[in-house]
Image (cartoon, rainbow, N blue to C red; front, side, top):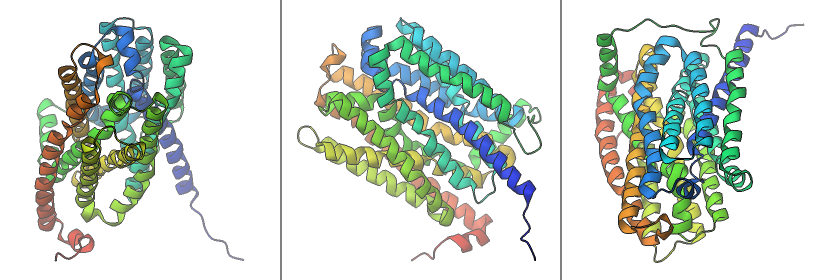
Length: 439
């Protein structure tokens, strides 16, 4: 009687990879929770700290600025010290920062706390992607990467309706302390279970001289695939990020006349749309990698179209249209992950983390600009108090997105042509296999 041989070492490695991914993913989920926890607390924050719209937006502006600015340094730190150490440090920083935010009673103290939230947040995602690229096979990486982004967005769900209830029932300090306490558990799990590579608990790369760092970053950025990934990330993410992090709740309540409960439902539906679309997009770019940029252009076009209908609607938009808005806009979240796949296939392994850091800046710089612009425009159109925001003011403010879409789509189209030309010259066999004949 014959038996089918099994590869126990391979199965054991896969089980270990899944455990490591789940722990790292949970840390990223918590980072998204902390990042998004201000979205439903914006109106409460204006009262607690006595601030206007521009000052409120400065919380997210500072957080995004720190996050985006740290992407390349964090990528270099991961290449040097390994993802385990950097990810654990990020979880500690997030826990301490959110604790400080819980006790903050003045605007400057709260700003400092959000600065460190952005710093801890910046140390998570690149680490998780590095672990995915190390522990999983090449064919699994696009799907696992999409699942990482998608499941991580559950943190935004926990920061929507549950955080709204916690703020109402527990108050500001106890609600944010409860959120901070979750980080203690994850730090323990990271120390116990995460390994940088098979057979190696911690990785330490070679120390790079400043000229080597500059050369590595320049080589990554010089490749048109990295630039295409950057502008894909820039164009797809900012609308959903801005709604989810700060301005969605006030926009739906003050701009569109929805109840607080309905606004929470809309934000939750947007996150569900993010989670639902991710695996589909991951499968799509795996089977048709040549058309990754076409997929991004189509998704951004749909987002622009629905926003145009909402902003042009006479009076306040109906609930069904706002539902469509958050669903279509939410797809932009996992669509931004396609940029990382461009970075992965355009750079060697030793530049992977730094290239990911470059690409990951795109959407967050766009989100930063939009968050600040909305606050400034709202104060311009409704001077005086945040309680006076009008639907007209929100139409003016949300229309600033067209500036960013115009820039992003132009650059995606530009670097799509350059990337395809590079592939035809340097990877003709790959093009012959994946590209459909041009008509």
